[in-house]
Length: 111
Image (cartoon, rainbow, N blue to C red; front, side, top):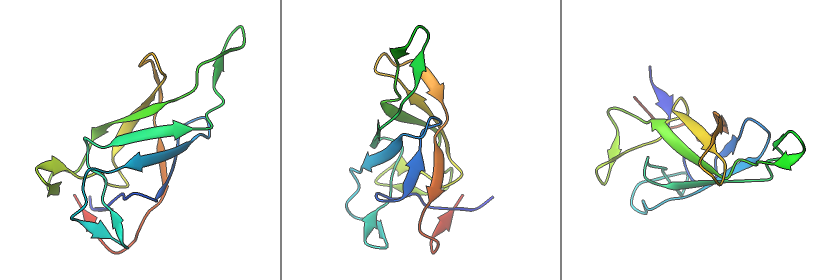
């Protein structure tokens, strides 16, 4: 099923409300003037308020993309789509839940 390409500057949240931001290694393929995110890019989470009992902070720190595009590649790396799945991880690499991609550009889609 086609979905829009996810790009730097698009909105995504961790499952606890933290803001996901991505730095892209791709500088050649742009949508709306912003770089398209690929699977190897670094996505970091800021503002996650998740804690575990007995009140120990365990915020989401990074996103690892698990299911990127299967037909769209940029510099040999699969692109991330709005429908792509991933997992947010704590600093200790403990899985914390999936990110939610909120908004993205609406002109270019892929599968």
